[in-house]
Image (tube, rainbow, N blue to C red; front, side, top):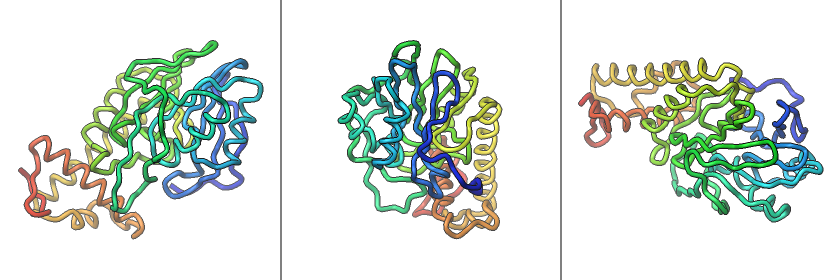
Length: 289
């Protein structure tokens, strides 16, 4: 998807609904769109900061300005990619607020990435399990475990309004990347199915516009992944092949810069098919099981 025209509202506090404000970080890129969206959730007395974003002085100052006279009572992270959590530590030092949310995860890899690497500075004061909540004055954020994009990914449900903060699991501009070994296509699909069963009113993603018809979008995402899976099974049925030979058939006219990302997505599907007994490989050559 192409970038929207500038100017973008970088550093500006935007009111999304009565309990939700949004501040766009100054980190646009091919994998963050216009940048990471930090959300402030709460009342005039106290707020939680969701996905504080990169450790950029201007962005931290913008978060503090958006909070105004309200106390920042919690800093909550959906996962630990470097465009989401590095500002947690300096913001906590500045405000005294605890860092609450996903479990720490650092995965070292020399593989090319289609997203940000992991944040090595993330050290939560409290890890939320699925269904646990953080509360403040007039607001409740409940954790929804959504592994797949990363194994530690959480969404946060604002019970007072029916909003769900989806991090990178469901985004308003692109499908989420699933990169093995930590990214798991089976977990990702199960998490989508779980969200499909919920009745959230709106999704606020870390990247892209609010999602006003969330169940419709999730249904389409599930269908898209199943279509990719069926393509892979069909191509393996024609002949065994290594991962690079799937790409020209599946992604017509793909930008060369995106080939490695496409290969990792195919690999994630193949591993899932292998785990389900539908595919196998011999020395990197994949075939129908």
